[in-house]
Amino acid sequence: MKKIDRTEFNNRVSELRFYIRSLKKLETLLEIDRTNEHGQYLRKEIDGLEKKHKSSDLIAILKANAYMVMYNLIEDTIRKIVKYIYLSINEEQLIFSQYNKEYQELIRKYILNIKSNPSSTKMAHYSERLISDILNDENILLEINKFNLSGNANLKAIEKVCREHKIPITINYVKKYKIELDDIKKLRNDLAHGNVSFVNATRNKTIEDTNQCVLDIVHFLKYLMKKAEQLIEKKGYRSVNN
Image 1 (cartoon, helix red, strand yellow):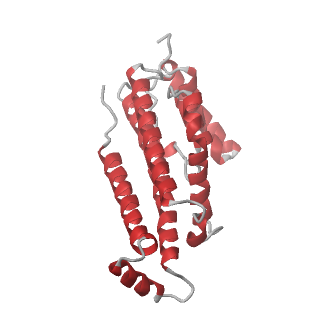
Image 2 (cartoon, one colour):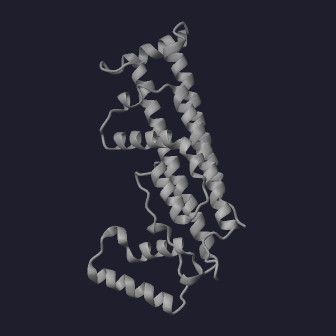
Image 3 (cartoon, rainbow, N blue to C red):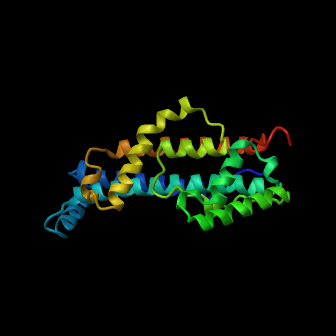
C-alpha cells in the first residue's frame, strides 16, 4: 500500500521550527538580555524606524505570522490527506455500488453540487448524470477540486471531513487539540479579514506558547495522516457487499 508522501510536510515543519527558534533568539537579543551590546544596537536601530512602534512590536508581528503559517500547514495537510485518499481509491476504478454509504453520499454531494445551490435545470442535469453512471456501471472517480476547506480548518470542520471520509480517528483523543485548532483558525481569520492588527493579535501569547502550539499541531497532523493510511489499508471506503 502506498503511503502519504511526507517530504513536503516535513520540509514545512522544519521551516516552522526554524522560524520559532529564530524568533526566540531574536526576542532574547532584543527584549530579555538587555546587557548584550549587539542587542542594544539592534534595538536602537529598530526603535528608530517608526515612531509608533518599538522592537517589541516586531516580535509581536512575527509571532502572529507564525499562527498564519500554522494555519496554512493545517489546511494544506488536510487537503493532501484527502487527495491521497481520492487517488488511492481511484486506482481501483470503482462503480457506485462498490462504495459504502458514506462515500456514496459524498459522491452525491459532489456530483449534485449541493453546496453551490444550483438551479433546477442544473440539478436535473447532475441527477441525470449520476443515474446514468449508476445504471451503466460507470467508474466513478473522486475529484479533489470538489473538496473545500478554505478558511475553516478548526477541529469541528476536520472532524466532519474525517466523518464524511470514514477516516478512523478517535474523537475523545483529538478533542485535546480543540482549543489550539480553534484559536489558530480564529487568529488566521481575524488577521486575514483585518479584524485585529498583527501587533495586537498575539499580545497574550508567549513564544513558548507558540512553540508548544506548533509541537501539538504537528503531532495532530501526523496522527491524521496515519489514520488516513489505515483507511486505505483496510479499504474503509468499500461496500461490504462488493
